[in-house]
Image 1 (tube, helix red, strand yellow):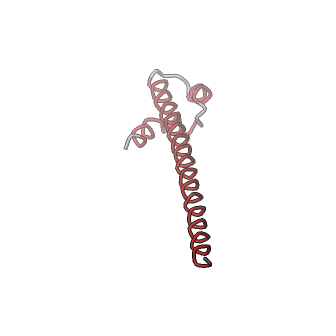
Image 2 (cartoon, rainbow, N blue to C red; image 1 turned 120 degrees about the vertical axis):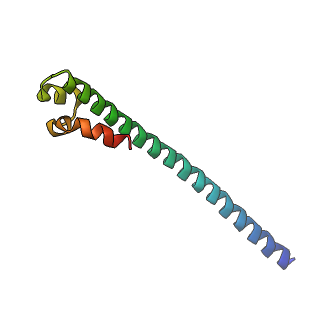
Image 3 (cartoon, rainbow, N blue to C red; image 1 turned 180 degrees about the vertical axis):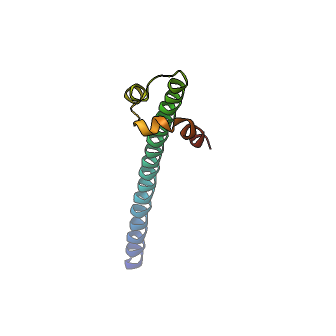
Length: 89
């Protein structure tokens, strides 16, 4: 009888541990997906801003105006031609 009780306690403990482990893994997976999505969206927004800056620059718009319209710094706008190429590598 004592053996069965200790065996039941061991199995219960393992069950609780395994359940917590699965929950933790699921939570980690969800957090990882959310972080990856946020990073991808931010990278996409940056690429779009650089593409837009490059196009405006080729149209001859002033760098200060391009910077205002794209939320990039003037330096980033000036380097937008090379930055766009670096984003796609």
